[in-house]
Length: 137
Image (cartoon, rainbow, N blue to C red; front, top):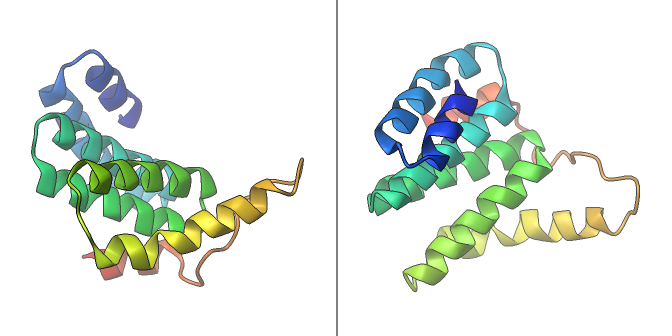
C-alpha cells in the first residue's frame, strides 16, 4: 500500500496518496516492517509538505528519522535527514531537534560510506523498532 501511496503522490493525487499511506500504517506495524514504516512516514511528510500542512510534514519526517535511526536503517536515515534539512532551510528554522538529532546519523553515514564495498545498516541506537514505536505513541 505504501507503493500505491507513492504512485498517487507522484501523479499529483495527494488525497489518494494520503489514504494509502494511512491504510499502510497498521499493517506495517503489525509486521514489524520498520523500513516500510519509515518510508511511509516520509511519504506522508512529502504529501503534507506539498499540501502546505507544514506542522504535519515536520511531525512525520521526524517520526521517519527517529524510527530509521533507532532501527539502523541507514538509507532511511539519509532520506529523512535530507527532508528535514530541506525543511529547516526552507523555513529558516532553528530547532534543537535539528541540531541535536541530525548530526549523529549524518556523521555515522559519512563514516560508513568511507568503507567502500562494505556498506551495511548500522545499529545507531540500542532500541528495537517496537520500543521506538511505543515511545512515539
